[in-house]
Length: 180
Image (cartoon, rainbow, N blue to C red; front, side):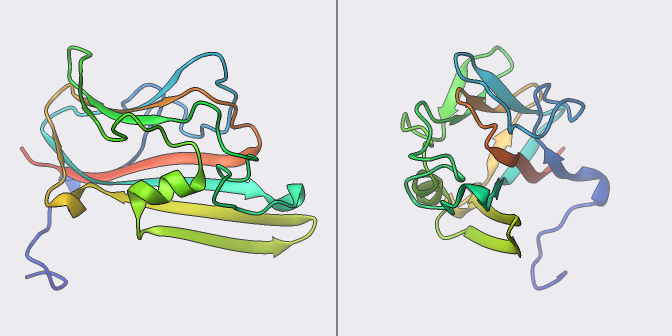
């Protein structure tokens, strides 16, 4: 038993990776950009059988807007996202095999809380004019009884369709391990 649990993995099998626009860790990882009128995919591609246990979403905002992080906003984007984002598992052939948002996109902080409850943390630091606020959300796939098993070539895919430039940082981090 290690650290109160019998579940552990060798370091070379651990996955702690920021999702990117390529899927292999070599691309862009901060998605505080404008994707309105297009679709930007944020990807993690399994290179062998991989168990993904959680996704951590990080939003860091500039409080100079004076709004703070409200339930109806996304980060500090007023009144949320017009389109929202979806999270899906896609097989190596490009077919969606699981829609983790079940057809209801994430448009607001409250929507993020819906899928990440109770693992949503809001932190404020600094003081004007450098006053920032962060929202960290942990989407625990294993909370449903088990993680997401991705086979080689499968992808965890987030589809972004909105303007996120008001955010300072917008990251998606997957954690899990290779199983064989």
